[in-house]
Image 1 (cartoon, rainbow, N blue to C red):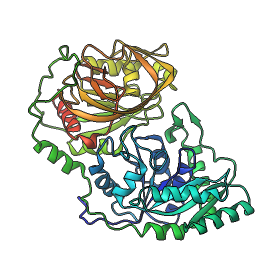
Image 2: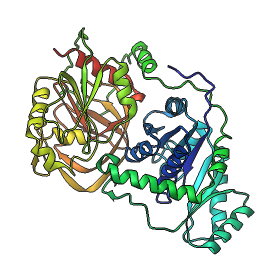
Image 3: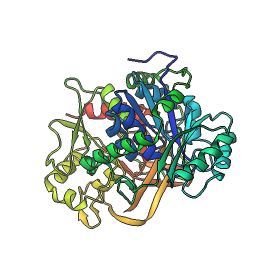
Image 4: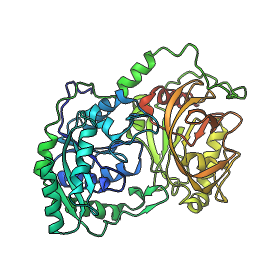
Length: 486
């Protein structure tokens, strides 16, 4: 069902002057606290992050959804928001980095500020006040006045040291005319352990994560004025947008005319790209798309499953740590992101599943593998045998690879036609050698020019994380390839 417009739901964007100020603490705590009041809370995260939305989902009982103006385009931010927030009493959007930080060299693109403007949502600024008193007013004034289109609805002060410290901060902000909506005292951090790519995902510590989210709710409930925050959320005006729908997106994708002359980036060699043999969609039962899950493969966007299902697939989740065979009737395989490097010994020990995946790929089955999936398909990971689908070896690295990418499909595959352009994101501390096969998956056009990934038979494997809502044709193409399997 497509939600009619104008669309209206009370909403808040939780932002901060910089990373590390307490956005996740406040946003997740607010989601949980309002949910405890019996409200249906829609959780959202600005940017590409996969891990925070897992905690948001735990706090609200609803899928955590990303709003990424770089990967999906500014025009999809409000429709995707309306899709996720339909029927809810409140929506809370956790920002990314500092309020005005976005894609490098692209101005406000993909910043929390841009998302707030696209959603016409008031911003609550979380300020780490641990080393300041009256200066907090100057800081907040600067953030409030930098862009007149960004509306600060108030401030939540974090890491406040004492009653006297709180009084000084409140007096300064009263002079600046900025409401204080909450005060959180300095306290031992709620146990949310981190490692090389951020917080440990919920799927790896579900019981402890539930305890942590409950503690965040109690902390926020004790220090924040929930009624005042709800009043600020209700000041958001209606959005004139149509809610995104997987079915509608696919219909429009089917009707879109292909680019008559798709271009590949200058200087990239595409001569080795194999031609993809178009196969008609088979009749009968729905194609079964097996999606890797469990603790080792936790990175996915909810819209991917929705698109696959809307395209006619039956989506079945399996756990490569435990399941020894692919789900019965599998005709397509999706292996997304996660932390296979943490579970390399266990993944390697599950030899029956590794062989099952290899047989499926060798038979030409369509496989879409992103980042962790790429590592799992390699010959080895940190010396441990993996599936051996790719003639490549992966290992942990000291170097963090992080950033947005503009990409073009170099080789025809079950996922994308050569020339298809997408924006994506890289986020890993591993390397794979070689970095690209004879038929690369993507050519990056910005911020650097290089080819990356592997296309062979039905396999499309790459480090690049993409959001299929930006180009629904990839989900449709993948389901059609899976439907053509015998």
